[in-house]
Length: 274
Image (cartoon, rainbow, N blue to C red; front, side, top):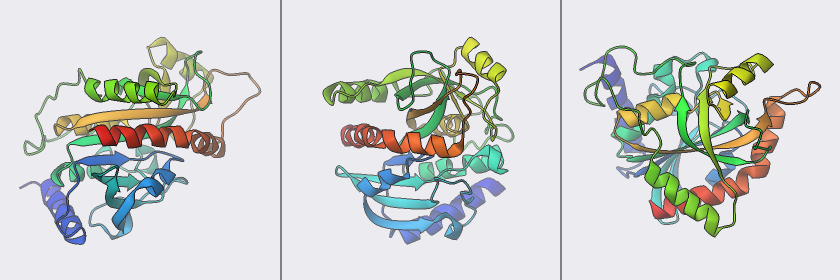
C-alpha cells in the first residue's frame, strides 16, 4: 500500500469514528465569502481541520476551516467550510486530498463554488456562472506522479469535467426561481496575485470567461475518482476594467456576500434534486 493510501485510510477511519459511521452522498466545497451556506445545513457533527489527521489547514480570510456533516433538504451532505489553495504553499496533492477523502467516505457527487474575476464583457459583479468547462494549463495537475489505481485510471477522460445532467437541473431551477445564470469556461491559475491586464487579455483570447485560484484541481481529482461534479462561480470583480480601478480581497469577499442568497438557493434546490 502506498504512503498516500495509508494516510487516506487513517484520515477516513478517524472521520468515520467521529461521524459514528454516518455517510453522505454529496460533498460540498465552499469558496471565498460563501461560508454562510453552512447556516442552511442541519449540522450533525463538525470537525476542525486542525484535528483531522493529515488534513491541511485553511489560512485564507473567508475560509473557516471545518468539515461538516449534516442534512439539507432531506439529503445528507459533507461540506468543507473553507478549501485549500496551491498559493498557500500546499502541493497540488495536498489541495485535493479532501476530495479523495470524500470519495472514500462514500461521496458520489461534488459541488464546488468559488469567487472569480471575469473577462467576459457580458458579465457584471454579482453574476453567477455555471462552469461548463475549464482550462487548467496554468496550474499543476494533481495527478502527476504515481497513479493510485484504487482511486482511478492513469489517463482519466476529461471531456465532461462538469456533469451535463447537473447543469441542466441547475438551469431549470434558476428559471423556476427567476434567477439569471451565466454559463462559461473557468480558467484556473495559481495566484495569489490578481492577474495583470495582459494576463486578463490572454485569458479572454484563449476562451476563458472567468479566472480564479481554485476548483480545477479539485475537479480533475473528482473526475479521476469517478464522481460527478457541479461547479459555480460568483463574479466578484471584472478583470478588464477602467485604468483607475484596482482589486482587493475585501472587495471580492463583499461581492460574494451580496450574491450569496441566490447562490445558496440554487445549491439547496440542486441538492434536493440529486
